[in-house]
Length: 402
Image 1 (cartoon, rainbow, N blue to C red):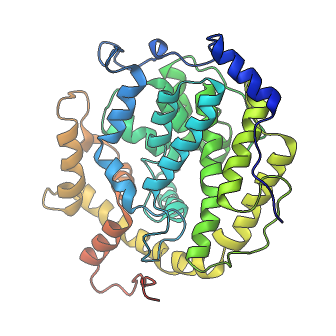
Image 2 (tube, rainbow, N blue to C red; image 1 turned 90 degrees about the horizontal axis):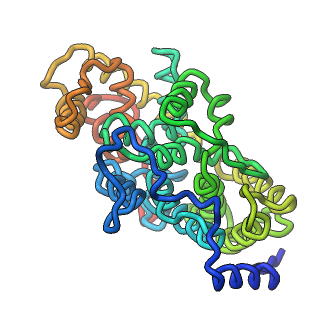
């Protein structure tokens, strides 16, 4: 099906241009001066470094931001530089969300901070790794692991970066696995309510995650942009990985079936249905197309038996072996262990100026979860090989020359 690139309607284009000419400001745009931090005596807004520019820079300079570059999205077993890593994904989310936010007159710096930070807590090996780590953490503690929650933990707890409540809330509520036709911001009273929301995710799992709604329109834009960024790109990667043919017959009524038109047409639809409103909304047809696209991706890509065979047969037991060994080492308290030398000491060095945080008093399972979630794919594989040189579990990558 040949679906064209849509354009904004002449009526909406004229309205936006007229509003800009008249200096109109979206009254729902989140203002920098309203940013809230745990320590309001620090990181104050000024002309050189506005509130959310500070958040962006805090995120960019974290060691965990570097690690995006070797965390895979869906296709973990391919030596192919053209397949998307998480570092590209967060940039795509930022670009798409900023395009929408610019047309809607929202705070682009807040959008960028949320987008660049939203996957900081993601595990190696994508959502499969997230699932396996959550299963292990739950079996040992009755608490769930979710990458969006852990992204906020990285910024707010592990590195103590005094990031704004608004950025943290947008990251917490970003989970792009749960599509909605309309995203209407839900007011957030402050850090006490935010902390309750975080805790509910640890204890309530998917039910709690699904109930999260961002408190700003900017957060709503990032959430829908997360989906827009991966649905078509995953198809593109699947073609590169030779999982599907370039002309695989995906279904679509209006948004298209390939990455570029899908991004364009969803952005146009959102702006058409959201401009001047207190919500972010997809039209009925675009929403159904997006739901269909996610479902078909699941059938053809995410649950592909060849893709999942390596995850279930190799990655799952490797997670279990590493988790058990690292937990034993944490409980021993030994400073000669890898978990101490590569993780605990690193965290302590980064928070040494914060006297109220003694990382070694954290629950041992949480320390293990923190460590595993921080790993890149390659580091995970290298650590497993270091600790279990005789393990039968080995990853067989598809080479550049296959």
